[in-house]
Length: 305
Ligand SMILES: Nc1ncnc2c1ncn2[C@@H]1O[C@H](COP(=O)(O)OP(=O)(O)OP(=O)(O)O)[C@@H](O)[C@H]1O
Image (cartoon, rainbow, N blue to C red; front, side, top):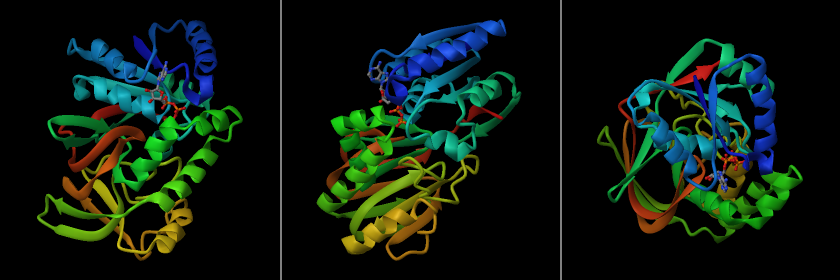
């Protein structure tokens, strides 16, 4: 039995028609399923929570973008009792890109229903004040999260998504946010005891997979099954140098550039001088000054081709 969690508004409203195609396939193959449509933000979390609260084994199939994946993993009660399949209908697709899952809908559906292969992946966490959120791809504080916050409320993204140029919104907002960004003093403490101080940090991001922001290969060496997070900090370079790093991140060739600092860790405590925006998998999480990034003790089983 499969539980499909569908964001009908993903990919600028195409989610619903894509679901109809998937449903035809399920009926053709006599597959037992239930479908749950998201009706508002964070609804996917309560749907996943309701399904998994009985402590039994469940197979959840997400049809949506990275944002819906994030909401679903935040609702799963017992990670080790769940199997997650994914049909990507988002605009960023960093989860499927990082895991090498099929982006083509037909192939993704075939893989989810018939591959018979799975992989256990780490799930990241951020803790701030008394709260906790999980992430599958990455979580960042500072400039990268400011882009997510702005894109999330931008009417331009809705319009550009409609004409299939959603990525342009990210380019425009990235340049605008960099122009307005005031780098902050930041301290990073790792579980290894290492401590780093930055005078002017643009952002710090903990990566469970190599890509965020729709294909930016921030941490080419991030593996979701190594029990480690890759932490990237861009700091202590003037803005023109930070700007020069941006186009290079798409190839992953930035790792040795001045101002780029990457380390592996199990846990990182980040304290910034000012409250800064935070994101988990591109979903905005208000402003914070202190947070701890780590991994859940349990892993999550993902269906792979
Ligand atoms: N019915 C709904 N109405 C309004 N917002 C919704 C609804 N269902 C889901 N959402 C919100 O839509 C946001 C984005 O969804 P999702 O990630 O699935 O698609 P996307 O934006 O196309 O893709 P990506 O995150 O990969 O860019 C999420 O924050 C989610 O909370």
